[in-house]
Image 1 (cartoon, rainbow, N blue to C red):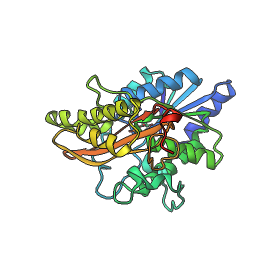
Image 2: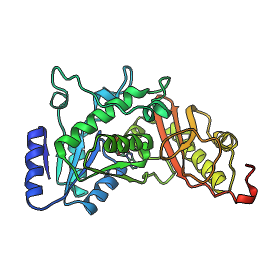
Image 3: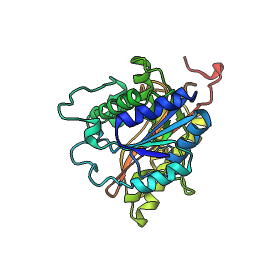
Length: 293
Ligand code: AMP
């Protein structure tokens, strides 16, 4: 596995692989690789012949005051892990390779980026504008057949699927299940910020999602009731940003669980660490005779 910095090196390696008959997979990451990332690399390894992992802490998706400078950067270790998981190329560009002087074009997906984390009172749509811009750029450099993303960032996956469809990127977006620690905490590079005593509150996010899932699957159709019970699972020390149920495909508000898949998503602060998690639930269809209208 080669580690490269420039777009030209990536294009040359991809061209050689394609000329040799390989399909191309890409796994975009911000590094500090963990088992969640490695599962994406494994999925890419299974489905494509040449696997490109990108490691780039993308400044345009961080707002002022967020953790851009503190974000863990562990390139040597990342390269070892990526190699051991079967990656063929690791692209770690310096910021000026992605955003040269004078850079002024952005890719924006409307509507889907204005809810959940994109609500202007939260991270805001600018976060997703940074994500879609950098992902569009790396699609143009790598020209993958399949790009692999994690369900952990559910809204990001929906937004990228929308972008790829709207802008005719000839790429399949494959979304892989969330990888968790044994106690249920979703793996995240940001978990490194958690103090040992913050683990208990952090784990309660997944408990709340499990509770919501169980209620929806048992036929409870009122989102307010489900979310109130789920919220009660959150431990002391969790500062809730949101816990919402939305349509899993278009992120529209859900007034009643009516058979369409539901995304239950949570964002919260535990100490200084912002955590997100989610689950997708298939509600039990309500028998026709039991419907009120
Ligand atoms: P990040 O490095 O956090 O930007 O994540 C890079 C990719 O890995 C994204 O597609 C994430 O959704 C995915 N990812 C992060 N954490 C997990 C996890 N625990 N399980 C599965 N995928 C994950």
